[in-house]
Amino acid sequence: MVKKTDLDQALIQLKQVSFAWPGLKEPVLVLDQLEVLPGERLFIYGPSGCGKSSLLSLLAGVVKPDQGQVTVLGQALTNLSSAARDHFRADHVGFVFQQFNLLPYLSVLENVTLACDFSPARRNYLKQNKLTALDEAKRLLTRLNLPESLWQASVTQLSIGQQQRVAVARALIGSPPIIIADEPTSALDRNSRDQFLDLLTTEAEASGASLIFVSHDEQLQSHFSRIVYLPEINQATAVYSTDSL
Image 1 (cartoon, rainbow, N blue to C red):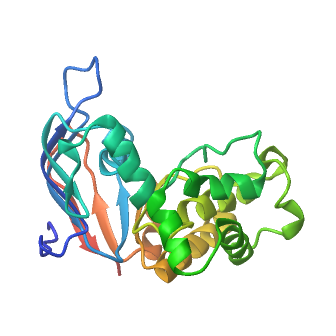
Image 2 (image 1 turned 180 degrees about the vertical axis):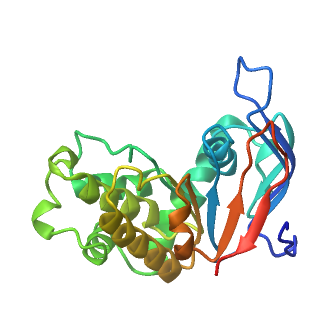
Image 3 (image 1 turned 60 degrees about the vertical axis):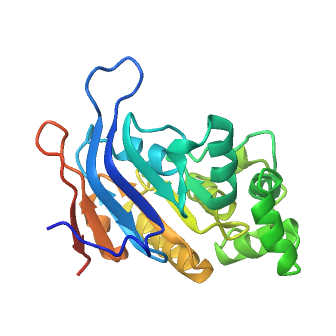
């Protein structure tokens, strides 16, 4: 069953979306409708090739759909230029990438505060709350259990689990309203995976952000408030959605 929401309240809306990567004749993603409400913890899963990562790229404004509309925070991303979408993403979307995308020539603290360098909205949020980017980075790293002894180290000296915490702190700093995570637990054992998810969901809830998490691992569903299944494109074009038990 497709879960219906009030479109006037939705943080994110996708309508009649079709998308194909350049050079491909057939779409990798077709969606009739998808909405995400403020504060939701949404888990999106499906088999390889169903378009999960493509969906995240559309939500973040990395790419535009070939057909249909993607609206985020009331802004139609399809009406923006590539540069404008980049600015919009920096201000409003914290992204935890599968490979983390941390910069090896920067320290842990510099990787976290870098998100504010590209975002006036994040800087303004910190200023209004009488915070500096450095102080907020330290607070987040402490909350995420990353030892202070590592804060000045290069991220190349960190374990995979520690790098994940840095990536989450970078996504959360400045309290963007949307956090997107693209299979960041794929390299973790079960215990480390569950600990990481607990930290991520707790921090997203504390900041009031909506969390959109993509994975092929159905065992992660219990951490989320709503579940969306993306079928393979040649099997169906509907999005199946349920409340988490």
